[in-house]
Image 1 (cartoon, rainbow, N blue to C red):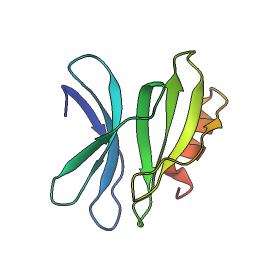
Image 2 (cartoon, rainbow, N blue to C red):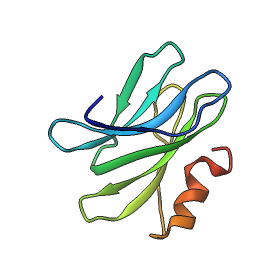
Image 3 (cartoon, rainbow, N blue to C red):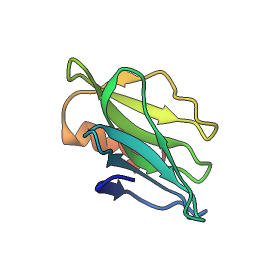
Image 4 (cartoon, one colour):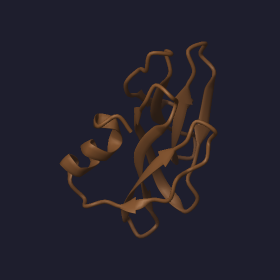
Length: 104
């Protein structure tokens, strides 16, 4: 992980989602397994990825921004596939609702 890494929450398996900045300044989402192994992920066309929520099945939720600075929600399935995204209203309350506060 880069100099700036943030983890959010912990599921019953000891897994945690988060995001980090790499040495080039790009932000990526990540999933940290209980044993410490970390998997970084990107979303095609994004300039910023933030993973905030995770359920006990391993699905990760969060948001990302595209090159036009439009914010979208995402759900990353346990197998790593990214579900189709939904454009978000740019408010903290909307992001909190999408980003795991409702259990993914």
